[in-house]
Length: 349
Image (cartoon, rainbow, N blue to C red):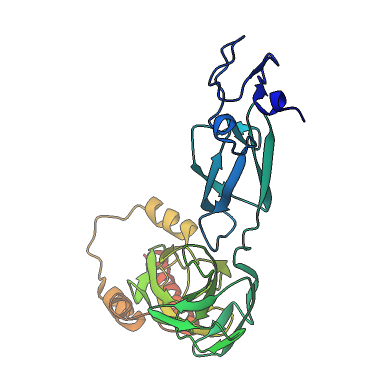
């Protein structure tokens, strides 16, 4: 190599030879890098390219840092970052970043692999039963992946289940169990919940009528208060009254009403009776005949009527509580006897 070659350098823009100490090209005025004067390397140098965090998970925000010398242009995955030395990004999956640096003389590149840890995952969480009676034992089971710690929460309790995959319990009321699994960075976690319904025995607090007995054609209101029932049926109608707390009836005879309440584990019944006093039946034809009779102007001894009323005990009917149907039938016969006495009177007259 001649001494003239060692004492010159070529401009990368116009390829003109220039003296080795020259700072600018004598043809195009290109500014030579300092290394062309001092004899240093002309190639770009990527001194560092790294991620700041030691551990990170899917969905994490990470910080990327780099340091590059002798470069006019710096790109990361085709994004110009020449004026920067770091940036942050969200890592949703494994990916590769490539930084490239170039100048007028050469190029350099370097890659960085981002591999986030998988997030905690509950693959299954179940209960042996979802509806139980009070203090019945249930068994919770689960399967978890990619976690550092796990807890089970219910009510005001929290227990560590990191090294367990099941839990037995006897709840005495409705309850929600929540399983939570954490990554090493506990900002990242997953949780699932299970509701368990505790069924209590059916309880009829009261079942009553607003009247113990009525006159025929009158109305009665039945009311009740029932707890823990899935269905409530009123007999003799066999009617579902689960959404009601009162019901109006108009019995034509003495009637026994039965309330039946039940759920999956129990049944309870209550009974209330309403007595009915039937109204006396009037013979329409006989009443019409009496209205057409013309009585002469005379003194008539009606004392026997009082005697007949005494025998029929009509005043007693107005004050007593109705008895069985046979009692009402007996009273009906007495009314007919009283009517017969009246007819005989007017025939004799």
